Length: 243
Image 1: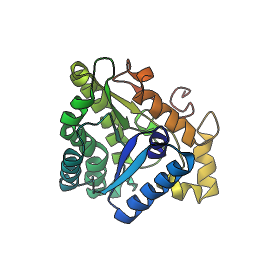
Image 2 (image 1 turned 90 degrees about the vertical axis):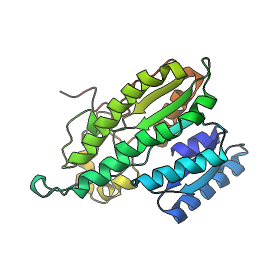
Image 3 (image 1 turned 180 degrees about the vertical axis):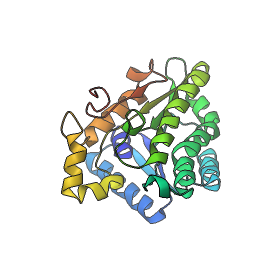
């Protein structure tokens, strides 16, 4: 959704995934849509496994070899794990934290030279981290490492925003509520579970493509250039109307 929205706006977007064929197919579909719409944006796929240090390093090296600057870095790769409390495995922590928290930090630090090349006082470079409503409210599911990793990402967002402000780099996060992506595919397959999930949303629906793209475009534009260190709860009112 994010990549398509930025390409439609004319950006050259690099997407990455550990699944090379799926990554390539997604880029081809986005480019086909751009061609049909007559936009100048393009999407380039690069395979990398961001749950590993080698995958992060490989992506950073590729970006350094092929780009001279980065205007927008979106950290969206995510993993989750659910298990009963007494049975929650160590790998459920290491995999989720490596993907959701460690990788974004080192992607930001690894691409700092490219972000600094793009940054200007009147037109900052932008880092946009995708957090979660599960870091703002206590989840009802037993996804302990997921909520903790996203809460950590929110704090890293604030910490780096303060650190990088003098470089004219903004760092913000979006904390989505339920958005119907592959991660929630199992929920959509169970009408009772889906009804319970959507029932927690005061607006009574999933987040839509336009909701997410509009927020990303705002943060990545001049309109959002005076905003940094902020967590935007794009959650249909779950966090704001709690209680």
